[in-house]
Image (cartoon, rainbow over all chains, first blue to last red; front, side, top):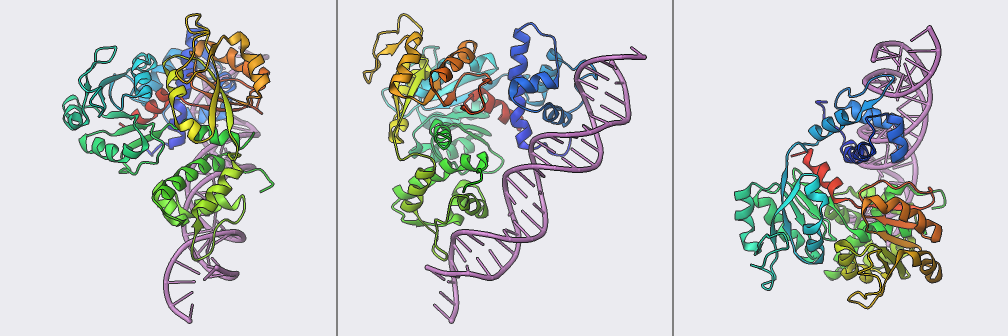
Amino acid sequence: MQESVPGIVIGRLPIYLRALAILEQEGREVTSSQELGKRLGISSAQIRKDLSHFGEFGKQGTGYRISFLQGKLKEILHLNQNWPIALIGFGDLGHALVQYNGFPQKGFYIQAVFDNDPEKVGKSTINGMIIQHPSELAETIRREGVKIAILAVPAGVAQKLAETLVKAGIRALLNYAPITLSLPPDVQVQNIDPVVHLQQMTYYL
Amino acid sequence: MQESVPGIVIGRLPIYLRALAILEQEGREVTSSQELGKRLGISSAQIRKDLSHFGEFGKQGTGYRISFLQGKLKEILHLNQNWPIALIGFGDLGHALVQYNGFPQKGFYIQAVFDNDPEKVGKSTINGMIIQHPSELAETIRREGVKIAILAVPAGVAQKLAETLVKAGIRALLNYAPITLSLPPDVQVQNIDPVVHLQQMTYYL
DNA sequence: TAGATTGTTAATCGATTAACAATC
DNA sequence: TAGATTGTTAATCGATTAACAATC
């Protein structure tokens, strides 16, 4: 648990959490590595190995108590708190992200929205946030102590904005711009580019 | 080239393609595995190894001709054709996806849109597509020979719809619903769940 | 007790990297 | 020729899986 856990293992924990939430919704109280594995298309050994990086959460013979394991995984992933988020870019995608109820449901709250279109600056989103100009970005992020940003802007301005965000104190960046960002290694970056996903699949078609 | 190429290698090819497009935009004609690697945060050896699965695309001493390598990668990924796409779900996200110009730019054309909201069925999108009821799904997909679908619906109905899509002839599915789908192994599935990405990053915060 | 499932070890499998001959 | 960079081999590194003692 002390020596660093592989990133690929961390990447699976939210998937486990998602599966546990569904099992819980179904009224289940206990599950096993085998059942989880079957649902997720993963071997049971891998699930047990992954969890063993962090402790012993199951019982021989019976498996895992769902609510207990959920709690542990949330603790590990630092999800026992709400996370404020800054959204950069209020185009169609930004609009959809602000509306998406999956974020607040999981403790992620978009707290500030930025766009450089003069037509949008000063207007308010459906849920009452005022769209700010990027020039206010650094101050707002510092003041609110925001650590996570979502970048939903065109590729051309993404790198520059990302650098500004990092300077302002952002430590984790969800990047929707179709470009590989160059940032200090201690800044977390996750990329979402639907075209990249589609282009992978066409290989097999 | 004949014995199957690891999926992880295929996953990087679109990233290479994206980087090459940027270099081309910058007016460059030639690049090297070292330069590409630096831009992408990947070792040059890995890039050369990845490409070697498919042939020899470079020249010792000089590197890779950008337009030639782009052509080869597009060929490998079957991107030398347009791909029609069916979009299931016309909520905020579906709306953003229909508007997104990154798709047609790369040869992906949303050709049919489905939503089960009676308020939406029969109405037309901004670019003139008529929103169809899911009951028409199978026939439309078969008729148009669509092989790729984007699933942008709530988690609760995703599995069922995915099965319908596969029965109708869909072979590749880009899944925005926050759930792991169970589908035949010969169907390609890629998942996009922003919450999963955020939950990975909070581990490090 | 009998059956089930964990946590963990060791073996296997696969991916990445270092190094270099070939050659432009 | 001298310098640069490829494609490829072998070594290293890391991740997955099989197997099983421990134990609920």
